Image 1 (cartoon, one colour):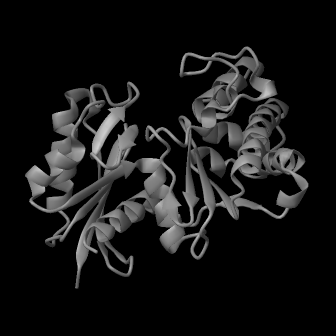
Image 2 (cartoon, helix red, strand yellow):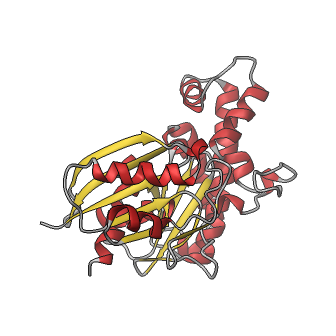
Image 3 (cartoon, one colour):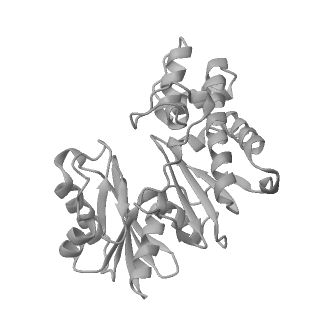
Length: 300
């Protein structure tokens, strides 16, 4: 039986899974990403995870944080979550370390491929997946294939301007973008400005919203509406069959989902009113499985 490894490299953790040709995840291991130790340490940790999976693999697929050139297998740019990661020859380095073919893409693209293969988008050819967490990234599948754009930068959904973010500084250095008011850190920071009660996490804010905390409900609703506006505009441009929303913020419950859906429905054009907006099905395994799918494609 053909076995491959799928790797999901993020700024906080790196996961690897042993996957067969049918998509069965046989083993999965996760370690903290040694980001502070530099790119060589991150690559070594990923290679070590593959070796620890307990079986030889025919190929490896990787979904990595950052802008990735999938043809060259190189990291084009990355945030400070992975210092020095930009310029890493990830495919080359892992092939040298493991001695098998390696395919590399962005982690959100891998996430979308996993959902399209085995999850909520199975059987769909035109899909928009949006991951809402520390940032807001997206992946568009066109006829089943990832749309990378001319410079491999396609998918920065968080940097779509929205009216409710006007004048608010964004992590990219600009202002007025959806990520500035709708990402996890933005929601938590906004709650701390509005509420007299301290909160250590967005999960706490979500729990408080569920029991009627007015500040929590306001902040989640404001961020969700901003995201819904952005997604509606993107859908008007791209015409997907389905929109999947995943990431940590998507766990915020009805106080987030209801205003998101309302703003999205108000923004899309009439012929697109039947585009479904829902969450993914694979959770934290999506990117690992999508990366494994990339590995299987290398063997064809």
